Image (tube, rainbow, N blue to C red; front, side, top):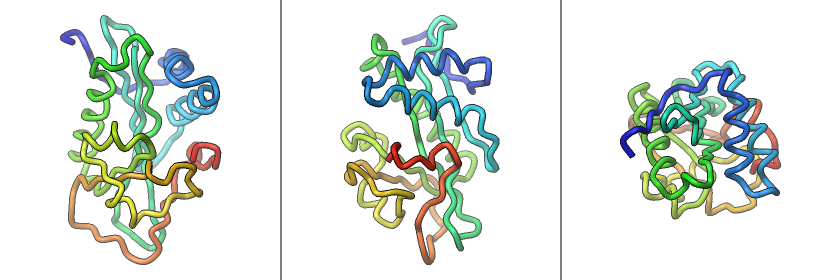
Length: 179
């Protein structure tokens, strides 16, 4: 796909990002996920929340967000979570999601992020290096409906997790319905 462009999302993209997620997810999830995507786009965080869009011929066809995590009593540790990832149905299975995820992994690695987590399909995310065993040391903020979907990967080794490893998410992800 030669004309695929990946760039940082901005607030002007909000309505299109909402539409992508409304179309990408099943009816039971679409409102919740599209609201999350918009809330993350507007959320001011430190470190920065990254939202990337994939464009084909100038039209947004997919979006992904990476937001920062923290763990109490673990100063200096930098973690992120990937959520949500949505691709328009007619573009699914064509590598758009993979390109967005890889772009985010490369960006976060270059920023010195230690770990990246995701709550999703192990068959899909495993191909990027996410692993369920690597996630066992990170306690999600809520009970998970599908515990096997909790996965992590190390981007920059060197920072050891100490004491309680319950992650703290940005405000838009503090909704138990998402977990």
